[in-house]
Amino acid sequence: MAETNLSAHERRKKYAVPALEKGLDVIEYLSDQAVPMTQSQIARALDRQPGEIFRMLACLEGREYVRRDPTNGGYALTLKLFQLARIHSPFENLVAAARPIMRSLADNVRESCHLTVLDQNQVLVIAQEESPNPFRLSVEVGSVHSPIRTNSGRLLLASMPDKARKDLLRTLPDWNSMKASDRKLVEERLADIRSSGHARSIGERLLGSADIGVLVGSPDSPFNAALTIATLIDSSGEARVDRLLDPLKQAAEEITVSTGLSLPVTHNSK
Image (cartoon, rainbow, N blue to C red; front, top):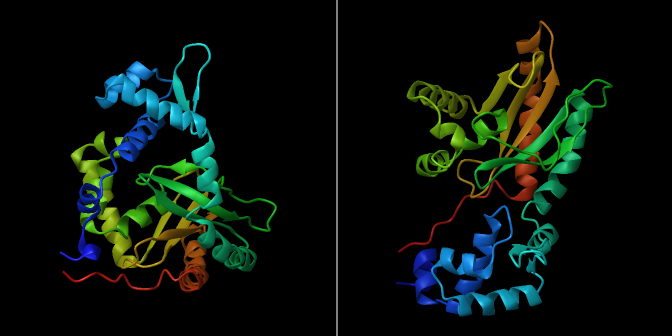
């Protein structure tokens, strides 16, 4: 089997680095904990010897990835990983390319627009441009939302391959608590979005509001985003939203081209 055709799991087994694996196990475990954890608690949770964990913690503390609580001796993550992620954000190029296009869109249609991505199993707002109007809707950059209870989240879910979408839905508390009939309604809504190429909602966030969104990228892209306009509406709500669709699509296409998200995925042959 060619090296490039090895799966991530196969490469991990073939090129295993036990010490690194233990260090990453500690980091990943601590990231899930709400309070500092002691050395013995970490060792027990990871099924490791306390001596192994002591050496890992000493190294991580020395590199400032973890800190020790002076009151109970427990360990917790510092902000160093967050700092590194901010320096090399995977969304940085997307935001840089999208911002001037979004600004032009907001000025043109006089409505606020925002850009979102799926970050693990949540919708993350990574950019927003405000409407020039004195009364406008805003979404906080950096806020996270449910994929099945937001317009942009449903748009991103609808663009995913079936298996990936089903796997993601199984991780959502909202989805797992739904009745079968409600799940069917969500699936039907996702099918409508795939068919129409855009997602819209009227009065979902608050009475007198509407959202309309289109995909940045394509179903064949390894990474997609959602560009959404949030607007206040009156009795002409549907017609008003309809007029926003064409300029929204044009802006999304410009972002798609400028970021290279229109490029097709290439698969290695076996």
